[in-house]
Length: 476
Image 1 (cartoon, rainbow, N blue to C red):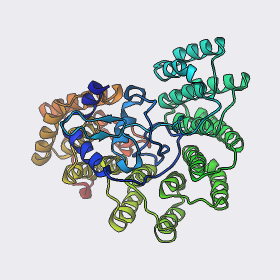
Image 2: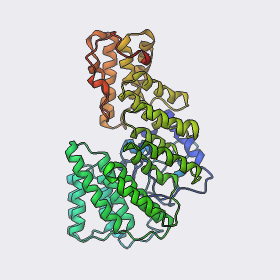
Image 3: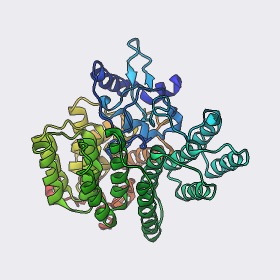
Image 4: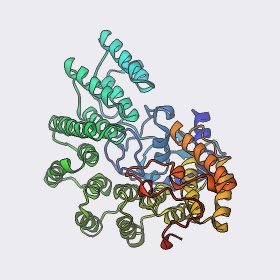
């Protein structure tokens, strides 16, 4: 585990994260939210696990790399217990994974300690077929309870295995497996995670959203009325999270949940409001978003974090003017301190809107803010707009910046970056070298490597040649 963390953290990123960990020392109050959110969804989603002092069930390798990376960029005070320690002399605690409720504190009738080997095996699965085989063996041995099913569900959510998740759910129903509120929350969060990671045709995604909405409502209705603030946060956080992934068709249910929450006598925190804000923003309910942000600060005396900021910026799609307004509302007016993922989200919005100069500037702002610039994603997102800037005008200044970024990119360790990101960075490096040596051999479409959602508008531009000055003047 320690060797895994060393390769993950590395250099300046490790120092940055240790600094965040030190900020958490001495804190005695923490946010209590959804224990069902087993993954770190920081820059994109503001959902956190229950703050229970416990040993983590999840190991680093059981949480996808980018989710671990996002977790370590979240506010350290959102975690009660560390899930690792740095290898430096200070041995500062590290926070990189969220976990379910501590079974030693909250006794579940559906969790048998003798079934731990099944849970561990299911969490380590790298292929759907392996997971289904282990689950089949567990059923054959009559050693399946709600916790075993939840371990399978958690893995499906981590890996975005929608079909496998449906199979697991159907098997649990067929075998009449009993679930408690925590396990139903895990299921709702897994539905949301699978929708978020879906790579299917629009028609299929629409069908999945309908199914997720129906299943989430069923799970919600079968939960008992919350008997504590923690239970309340579990329910409302999971429900709004899946609503945020479903979109417009989930708005009526999200509003019902909001009305329901007002009758329960518990306080909705800024963290719970996060996914509701993301839903409203993705549905272009801008006035509601702005009014809710204002109410959160003025009426409810709460605040929002960089987690919600990053999620809102991601939710605007290619509307860069809206992104800048949100940045002003939260960063300039409310003094939310952006993290790395907020800057990359801001850069992405401008890039997909056909504004590579602005995209490149906001990546440079990461360094201005004192954060590391040598991570695989940051370097790749810096190279991408630099390629287009230099290709458009072949200006000397752009060439110098491209060379400097290329030098960094050639020394980036991508062992823990994930296969797709590593391939993108490798391609960007190759294109950079080719552009610097023979600009006329490349046209604009050759240079667009990141296949963002929404689709970058530059895909639809003509096949401009190098030096043709195709970028608008305000982009220079």
